[in-house]
Amino acid sequence: MSSSTFDFLINTNMNCSGFVEDKKGDIWTTGPVNSAHVAVWALSRYDAKSLYSEKPAVAEIMTGDAFLGLSEANDGSIWFGSATGAYRYDGNTITDFYNKEDQKKYTIDTKQSAVVWKTSMLLASWEGSKFLGDRSGTGDVDILKGELMIENRRLVGGTIEVDMNTIENFADQRSLNKLPPFFDVKKFPVSTFSISKVETVNDGKTEGKNG
Image (cartoon, rainbow, N blue to C red; front, side, top):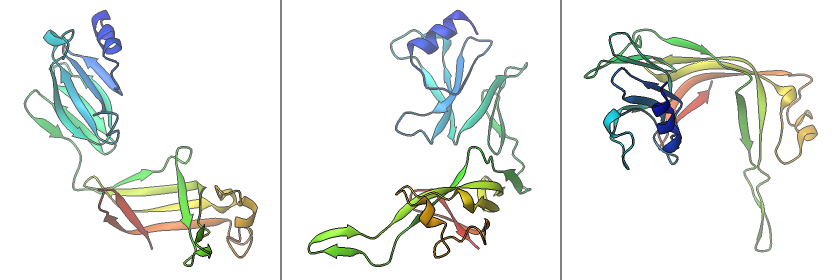
C-alpha cells in the first residue's frame, strides 16, 4: 500500500473491512454502506484522480451481505468473497462462482454464537391501573455444536445442540431456571433444535421453525 493510499484512508475516516489499490491507482474497499445500514455492505471503487478532492468519485459496484476478502488478480480483475461464495469483477461483469446446484453445510462457530431465548406468561398482572408486567424473561444458552444448511444463499435448515447447564436469565434468575419446573438440566443436560422450516418476516430477516 502506498503512502497516498494510507493518507486517503485516514483522511476520509473510512469504515471498511478490506481495501486494495489496483494497478491504476484506484482504491477498492468492502464494508458497510453507512453507519445506519451496517447489515448492508458494498464493494466500492474510488477513482484515483479524485482521491483528494472534497468529494472523491466513488462507484458502488455491488451491494449485499458482508464481503470477505479483496484482491486484484494479475489480469486486473477484482476478486472478493462472501460467506457463500466468491465473485470476480472484470470491469464490466460480475461473475458469481457460487455453486447454486448444491446445498452447502456450514459449521457454527460455538465461541462466537449463542441461542437467545425469550419467555412470557399469557396473562399479565395489574395492581389497580399499574401494569406489573407479564413476567417475561430473556437469556442465552451456549451452543455445543451445530450446522446450518444454505441453498441458493438462503437458510433452509440445520441442527443445533445447546448446553442447558449454561442457561442464563438476564433478570438474575439463573438458579431458578435450572429447577425441574423450568429446565431440568440434571435430567436433560443437552437440548437439540432442528430447523424444519424457514420463513422470511416483514423486515427481510429469516425466521426458523423448530421441528
